[in-house]
Structure formats: C-alpha cells, structure tokens
Amino acid sequence: MKAKEIFAQSNVLTLAKARQMVGKTILVTNAEYGGNTPKVRRIKVELITSWDDARNDESAPEECYANRQEYWQSYMTPRQIAAEKNTYILKDELGNRTATCLAVRNEDFQPELRSLYPAIF
Image (cartoon, rainbow, N blue to C red; front, side, top):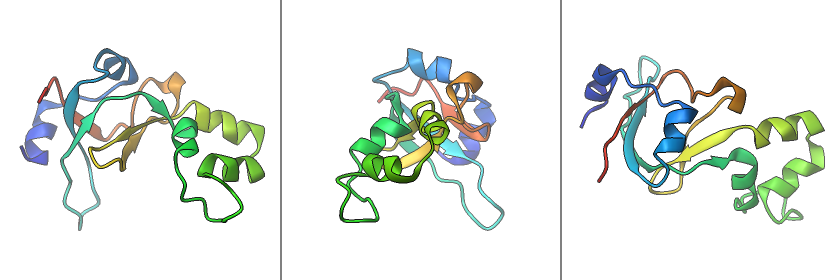
C-alpha cells in the first residue's frame, strides 16, 4: 500500500481509536515536506508514554545516566516531565518512533498522521 492510498482513506488516528486497537497492526503515514517522500510504516498499536519509553532508552547523551528518563530528570522542570508523561508515542516494527500524541487532552496524534485501519495482518 502506498502513502497516497492511505491519505485517500482520510482516517485520522485519534487516541480514542488507538485505545480500541491495542495489539492490532495498522499502517500509518504522515505528510512530508516537498522534497521528502511519505513513508508507510507498519505499527502494532501499543499505548506507551514518551516518559515510560525513555526509561527503556539507553541512549542518554551522558554516560553517567542509566537511561534517557534519568537524564531528563536531571534537567527538566516538573511541567516538562508532566508533558512527557501525557505524550503518547507510536513505534514501528523496528522500535522506531513514528509519531507522537501532542497531549492526552488533545485526544489526537499529530493531525497530519493518517492511518489505514483496521488493517490487521
């Protein structure tokens, strides 16, 4: 399936829809700038916050931190930490982030993110 076909479906992945599809596999794409080609990514829907994901991310820029979450705690304000705890992410099959939810209260992933669902594989 090509990105253009997914956009033709006009499905916007909301947080409410994602909650109903946990464990299912869907195809997603998002708009790119003029010179870039939109990518189609296959993701298994899991609701994980950016904060929780950072605990498993060992790529902290400083060696003295066990993970990115610990690094963030070293410099982020309580408000910034709360924002990360209220931000949901999607990861593709390789574990790469594909898109983020701007905040739980928005109930939406990035507006330009489009998905083909249900696309169960």
